[in-house]
Length: 103
Image (cartoon, rainbow, N blue to C red; front, side, top):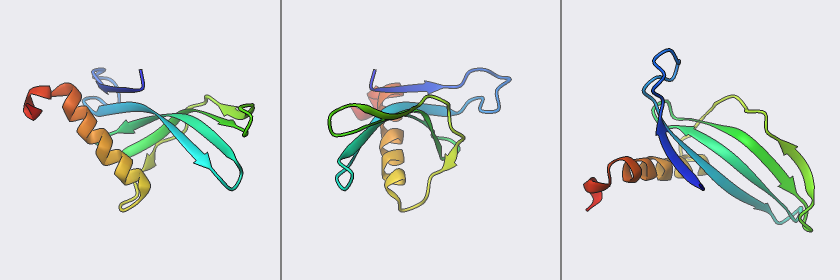
């Protein structure tokens, strides 16, 4: 699944009740002729994001770098590209969990 919405229901978790969206992102770097694919998690209630896994490829599709160690959360910077993606994730969550709102 490319994008998935969820809510933390573990009451012993530090993120109990928080809304999350996981997505896959593709980034291309023309100057290096490389790209990477990342699995990213957005914490919508705390305005945070973290990378769950990342793989970087060369122009032939060979793996240059791979990391599946979850990174720490980073704040969403206002006015950044990350905030634009974050806003989209909030809309996606609403569409997934409350579709009748948009009918």
